[in-house]
Each structure stands twice: as C-alpha cells, then as structure tokens.
Length: 117
Image (tube, rainbow, N blue to C red; front, side, top):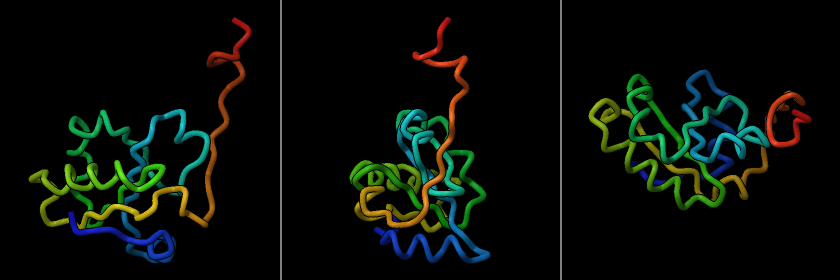
C-alpha cells in the first residue's frame, strides 16, 4: 500500500486521462445505492478471489464508507504479485468525505425483496 489519498485528489484524478481504478469494497446493494462514477464493485470478502482482475492497473484507489476497511483492502491488493508495480492507495475518510458526484443504479421492480412475487 502506498498510503492514503484525499477525496479531493481522487476527484481531480478522475478528470484526467490517467484516472485510477476505483475499487469500492462495499456490498453490491450499498454500491447500487450510490458510488463514485466509474468505480467498480469488488466486495471486501470477494477481494482475495478477484484481485487478479486488477493486475493491469497502474494506480488503484480503494474506497469504503469511512476509510478504514479500504486501508486493509489496499494492503491486500498491494501484496498481490500482479499489482506489485501499481500505486495502491486508500481514500482517506471514505465515502462520508466524498463531495463529488454519485452514480446510482435502479433495480427492476420484478426483483428483490419488494417484488410482488
């Protein structure tokens, strides 16, 4: 892990041609409710099995609600042989400190616990 990065720095980087891969480690349901545009959802408990998908990244930023679990996620990603040359950072303060835009996903009314059948 290469340390922490502020939410404002992440927001600035997303506007460049060399934007980092943003890895949101929350549950899929939390991710659907709102996430940083362009981020990808890899829940923390799936990270060991899916870390290989990050092997080609030059820079990775992990995010979580408060910036604590994302530190552990960044350490795990940074310890993987395929990401040893990538810059891996955790977003300080997590999504509670994020002032930028959020993307949301709507669910189909025929799916989920509120579905009539």
